[in-house]
Image (cartoon, rainbow, N blue to C red; front, side, top):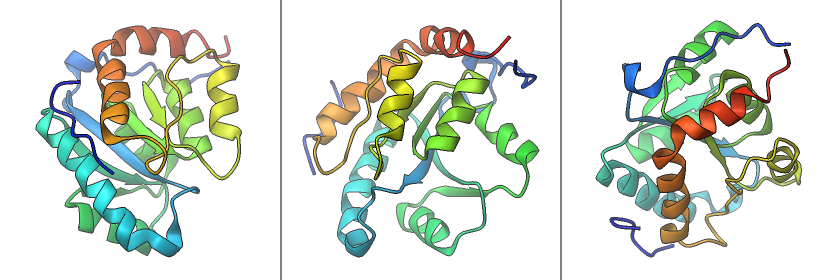
Length: 178
């Protein structure tokens, strides 16, 4: 894709359409249990390149944590991202429901994205849960791993998610319990 480098019964409210969102180009990132914690400083280079590519695409990445976490805050600061640490479900949903795309390796955060109809891309995790979740809801956007996939391949997935975000929102909303 152009611009991507080749390198390392729900009562939840329906989110506003992306074009009505105050964060039309906001992309939220979370961490993943599969991130190599013992090699995190080197891994930051890959994440930095990814965040820079998101910005080059005109997107506004930020970092979301469902709790206050020094490691998450450090990652966000290192990447130059606005950091949101949520202390309540309401606060978490207020951020999630106004984004164009979620990129997360956290199973439960991905489940919230489904319930809110927010398109997401998931990192591979230490378990098969994220892949199984995508298969379970017949979500065509596959999981990815920064160590196994090139930045260009991941960028292609981001572009696909963004170019068809209305389609993915509708697909996800059909997965909600009635």
